[in-house]
Length: 99
Image (cartoon, rainbow, N blue to C red; front, side, top):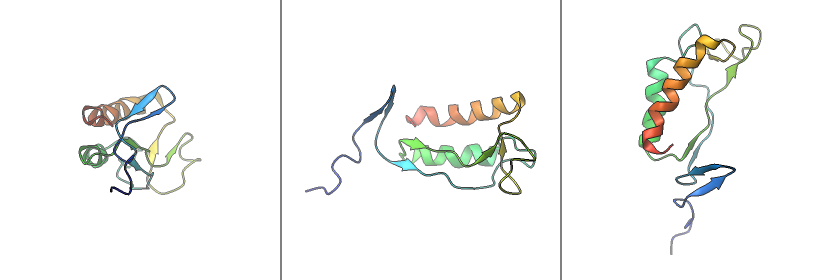
């Protein structure tokens, strides 16, 4: 008998359907570019987790008021509209895997 029989079953959270109950907790990777934009390394890092089967990824900490709101030396920036394309690309790199 499988101990965690629901682990790989879908789960609805509000209007979002998760493919399974595997959740990647946020971690400070510091893989973004020095200016706070999403780097190719960061995008690839999350894409590999999605390929591995994670149903939900919670991104690492970001700043909404750089440099004042930074919790570390390097973290992604959420304070400018110019940051959106990188986050959009990151989201679309995990979407084909149902994450």
